[in-house]
Image 1 (cartoon, rainbow, N blue to C red):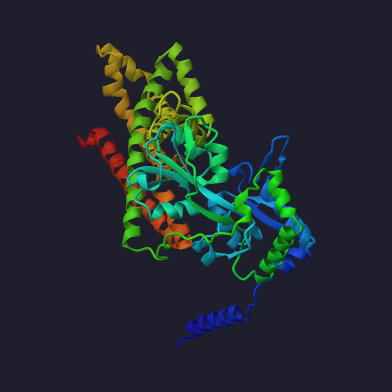
Image 2 (image 1 turned 90 degrees about the vertical axis):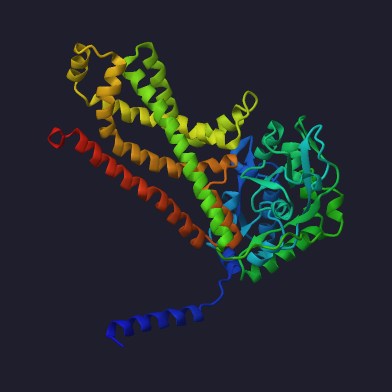
Length: 489
């Protein structure tokens, strides 16, 4: 054994002994020492969970805020809320960003395997909503139809075992907007979400009866036995002295379900925690959606960008409108533009998700491409235009045969960079239910309860798509440079 190998072996052995000797972390002791119980939630979930106070947006209110405040008070500490997107709540808890989750977290078999769960503090029902006048009156009748729900929910688990096309959303309001617009045939979500975003819409009907029942619980890291026991005692005391009921009554959430036996949620079996052939097929489909979406969007951006560039250089009145378009699209977020196209224009024109994604990306990147082409055209000498006109060529012929081929050589590197950027920016279209490569990665990461392997696979596929594009761009540059060199003709 060489000296270097012996040193490496000694370091690994030392790390192994350190890991073995490590003691379980006592989160309850940390909470009491710092005098603060940190908890995570997503304010995008809206009323009545945890949301910004309309009278004071810097203050978060909600029935779960009141419950956590009561729990913290009974532990002798203060509660501190930390905002985190719903899909990242569990990973953020596991990495120590906060001590617990209380945000409509459902007691499911998957959650029991992943986290430590407290006693239930609220019993909910799964409510099925359809468009008013719809012939579908049950979940069984929706075979082969599109049903919307939220990712990482008991409703999602229920739909997995059904022969339906599940459409996943990130927020509670969006599924019902799509239902009213006719983009999905039904929505299955907790009654709290349905009552506030769906049942109040005159175009939507919430069907009577509970599809299933479940319970909300506090989520903790595995190993936080002491904190779980303390929270369970506090919840038992809140039920015994009536504080929990008073909080639910304050938010108009107390109903007959709260006094009935607490249901134990069951769902479809969890997926294998390995990337198998089926998962690889899904990843490849996600990569194809990303590539197709990016290619078509960039084609639209290129065509529109050329038109805008020419108008800005040659037009008079039109140049003001073209400039306004470029500044507006570059000065506002792509995410906002996607929301406006998909949801804002729904009363006028109902784009499907893929069409809205292509249109949003194409219109946004057209503003950037127009500046690339304008700069490339401006770099050419005016003498070439004057000479072509002297030879009797029209403005269109001059642009097509003289100026544009030369400008293309200048613009090509920037175009390649923009296409790679668009390829990565296409990940934002998941907010309008397009399941591309990044969205597929997040879904698989939740199923596998880990981001490392799905993340590396996603990165490899992005690299496999973008690297050949860079090589192709360099080959085209060399070819165009050779064709333009008179010494090679």
